[in-house]
Every structure is written in structure tokens, then in C-alpha cells.
Length: 233
Image (cartoon, rainbow, N blue to C red; front, side):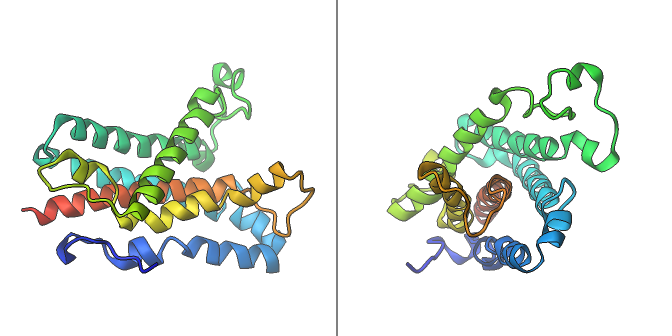
């Protein structure tokens, strides 16, 4: 399949961002995991490792793009779209905050006792308190990435014209690389569980790079809307 954005040139994001950047993380971490497992554990997979820090950085970038988009959101054709963009932007903020335990991982403060008592990992975050702040939102996000980021672009359906809501709501093909990686990265773990495999040839905490690709999907999705909106001026 030849991947093209399917939109006029001035509405496209740069190919380095949506096409070439997504696989870069895996091209870095997999060779390190194989060739230098101790370095991987220390510098790549730890609380302040590459993956754990890259995810909130990408999420913060998504939030910034989202807030810039909201400044021009009046140009979107419906109020529902404006609310959707706001919710997606706040989702990026939540994602970044939770990944960093709202700064605790960077600044090392002690967890307040009332949070420590209900938090599985005794951290200053919500996702270790209840599945309603972790597994359930994650499941919904994965479903949206699968439907909007993989299935919709592969179907090649027209999302209509800029005057229509679907044109802005549905992702373009530009999210496809990050979306397909977000879905595929968990397949080894799920195959292991499904077939009761004791150990995979390459063992990773697959949920961590998946979170990175979720964040990248949201960044590219919001950036694509903003780019298309700017092209209409």
C-alpha cells in the first residue's frame, strides 16, 4: 500500500512527522534491548527512561497544538467539533500529567497520605487508583485509534467537505503509521497470553511503547486538524 495523505499539498503535515517519525522509537529501543539489556533497563525502560519521558513530551506537544487549535476553533463548522477538540486536548494534558505523576517523577516529592492509601503504587496519580482512570479510558482510546486511525483510513472513505462535520472529525491517512504501531505493539503480549506462551523471543513492557504511540496519534490528529484549518484562511 502506498501511503499518501489524500489532501491538497498545503493541507498536509510534513512527511517526517507522520510517516518517518513514528517507527523511530522502535528502531532505537529494540536493538538496545537485544544488544545492551542492562542499559535498556536503566536508561530506556525506567521511570525516567526514554519511553517514560518521551510519552509525556509528545502528550504536552499535543496539548500545545490543541490549545493553539482552540484559539481558532470558531472556524470549525459545529459546536460539537469544538467540544471534541477541547476534550481531546484535555486528554493530552491528562495523559502527560498521569505519565509524570503530575511532576512527582521529576521533582521527587512524597505522595500525600490520603492518595498513598488508595494508590496501588503509592504515587501521585489517578490511573493507579481505579480502572475508571486507567483501563477503561485506555480501552476507549485504543478503540478510537483502531477505528479512526486504522480502519477508517484503510477504507478510503470520503469524509466530505470542509463545511461538513465529518471532514474534521475523522482522521486523515496521516495518523495511520502511529495508529497501526499503537495496535500492533501489543500483539506479541496478547498472543503470549492467548496461547499461554511462557516467554517471547523479545520481552518488553509492551504497554509503555503503546502509550507513546497513543500520544503520538493524538498529536498528529490535532496537528492535522490545525493544518487543514490554517489552509482554509
